[in-house]
Length: 314
Image 1 (cartoon, rainbow, N blue to C red):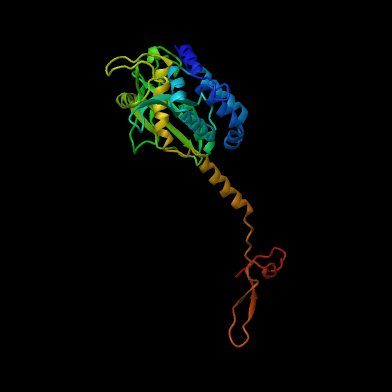
Image 2 (spheres, rainbow, N blue to C red):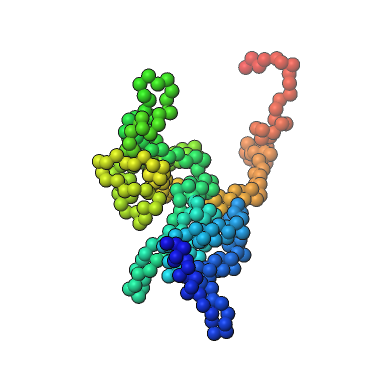
């Protein structure tokens, strides 16, 4: 299907009035990505290679399905906008940042496909770590036979113990089938200050609400109804985790601006000149026209000389 659509798009490219071959809409987007290589190099953070970023964007286009190809035809600028957002955040196209086509209503009343950039939960964790305000991100799913306790306001983080089969001598190694179906998920962060963030705790019903509101099921896997045993597939578990991490994302620092502000503050402290306050050498103790002056208490001269270790009997 995709190859047929690509062939149709390629056939739309003809020649202009001067006989020059015109690029197809998809090839035109590729050309624009390549032409913006220097600009991407100035936008990406220091840990990202601009040339590699461009190559990954082109790989996303080459591997795209029918809807992505149609979006490149209908609204090619939306891909470039999403690529710019991905570059600014320093994420990996197609891995921690996804280019997802959606069919949206246009200003003229027609419907057409557009590209929307979606940050993967691994990308959100990457942004949280890079901001510098968090030292660890924890996210775990809870299953039917696990022990789980959460008392908001009375506990800093939830208590979670993985089910231990009877007779087992080791804890925490039970598999998904032994532990039962998914019943919840939670996430929290250990802050650089040593404390914990506000935990994000969700039961199955809340996760279903997020699943129902999702614009795409590309990352979720098959839909399951309340009361049914959820399919035990990797994508489903990953999306439960993503939902909790996404909620946690708003509770903790995650922007490059936060890191930049911390670096500026540290630089300002380092460059601040040292301030020394001189202590007075003497203090006034007498009266009359000419006050008597006595040495300050911390003046070495005020210390009486050693007397051979004799004790003061006064």
